[in-house]
Length: 260
Length: 260
DNA sequence: GACATAGTTCCGAAATATGGAACCTGCCCG
DNA sequence: CGGGCAGGTTCCATATTTCGGAACTATGTC
Image (cartoon, rainbow over all chains, first blue to last red; front, side, top):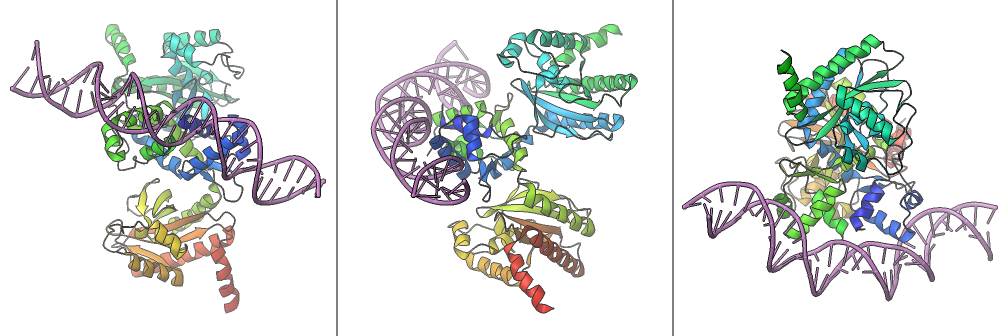
């Protein structure tokens, strides 16, 4: 276990739920002895990865992470292209759009496009959620090989909300359905009363994959409106897949040319 | 030189001017041998601090930095308070506002408030500039002790734009002027044709310091308009200093109560 | 004054990093 | 086809860090 590994382990303790941590918190979360924690925190602080509040003595991510985080948007090609299309769909439908990437069995929100409907933003950028419990998360998983999926899901299947797949078998049933129909939908999962539809977009050039979703209040939308969202998303997916050379576009091309 | 130090040295090679780097770039910038560079880049990539473009094989800051960067805004108290006030001033004057912090002899932009005037945003958040060459940078420096300032300015005085102080003596003259008058102004320095006025705000509670500035086109503003900006900034500074318990507020209080 | 909480420093043992050299690739050129 | 070579990885003996228990400091607080 290298010094870097330990440093990362500490950095990963921070989250939107716990944006700052005390010395004791870090010790408890990492399970490392006091001396090691003390030395590591000091190193991280000295190099700018962490800051220490001079008053409360608590630690939080530092200036360096802020600067580097700004630079992360460098790989804009795929994401900004997706964002541009998503903005239009959100403007037309009034719903809220999300772009996320997969990290292990979780997804991380990269961009959010607020809708005009009065559904307040619930997942700010940076937010982590089990990908098993979102429409675009499952859409991304559905595009991986079965072994890859198995490798990502933790040994002890996580406790998920009521409407999410409750075990590995249920998960695979839903993923197979996404593979067959091309449609990924969620309702009342991560957040009560919120539904969403999503799809996965993969660059043919770089192989990067992002999940794109539109979310809405389940109560405040009709079946007709949800069908409209499905059409909008299908059109966006088709367009983006063409633009990015998504391998899935090849399959779709057969259908397109075959049927007419 | 610890593993962490090396890692940070690599991370610090990235900047808005160089948002992604090749293996060779990193080797050249750090001066480390190939084998060390190879191992370090791999570690950084594996732990999520860097990502590697699968196509170009170039490296860029990774998902982890994105997540942590989002969390940095946790210490909002001082900054968001300043941002709120700055928004009002920018709305009234139409100019662009900046909030930055000091890091060594440089400043880093944290927030930007776009104005309504057609002066495009030149310094996005995360941008680094020598603090010696900006109004709010010098305002922050002016509040440090002379030894502290001397320790921050590099041994070989940096090459700065025409209108910035060209050596340490000139710098101290300008800082003394800021200390006496409380006003910090810049024109045609970091960016040709752009002027700004700024001040430094220091929390009485935590000791944190931020620099706040309003910038405008030199050509497109009259002396009267610049005087107006000065009044606006003075009012904002007074209000924020009161709200945050800035030690400077104590001095101002004497004047306030003494003169009437 | 005893005691708990919070954190730092010390030190020998053990794990890790280091960088030179050998070793892979894929690629271009003659 | 062979050779040169940029770009990058792996190996290995050596040198440097890191590790964590324990002793220590500081600061309340009953």
